[in-house]
Image (cartoon, rainbow, N blue to C red; front, top):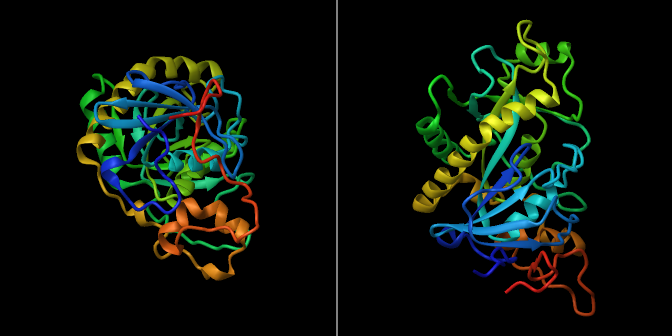
Length: 331
């Protein structure tokens, strides 16, 4: 099983593409991966949250990454989102399943339910939201930030596996807050008045970056609590979140695995897979060399592969091949 896939300038090749799985709070590993390897990558945006675990489910290669690190050492603000998404794309990932803990903002969305969102509202203010800038401007469309095809697969699978008395909700708005503290009651009521369904701290940042990197993105949101608005339920605490995450962990693993099998069978195309086609505003010849080099992984199909001017040393790029977690070279 060779590791590098998404080399700069490669064309869309869904038959060989990989699936990425981003594990959130309570999901720090993925069960059932065969031929498992751990890879460490450097990226133009620093190091990812953890080593990337590359394995296989049937004929589909899967790359798992714990977004907070396997020991949960990154706050939602500190997660190296750009490094994480760049690393996944560099390994040939074209679909991402995200698993996230959320609080409910609506009475009918109960703790231990799950929800597959189709919209988000961004209330963060301390995070880079783009791979571009520094002399290159891109405006991708995020009117529908989650991939509808991938979300449907996730929801269909979830529906088939939910235990009696618990529900999977199709669609809904995810309010993304900065964190790491939970909401005030006034904030929670404000978000409810906006019609938001769940609240979390990570998804919108990943979804925006995944769109720029031309990866389809969908989320399985695991509901752990009623945030702090519900007068008849305790306000959210870490203890409550972890207790309900442990209850949901096995079910989430089953849903992700079965969804991966569906992706393997369908290898579905997505509008996300050509998101940059009409998004690049800056003429290629006006983009600084360092920016061209850093974004070449995404822009090569449109601008052509970047070639460093003669005599200039490459800067800021990841090694051409990942290395195993023990430091040895990957094959």
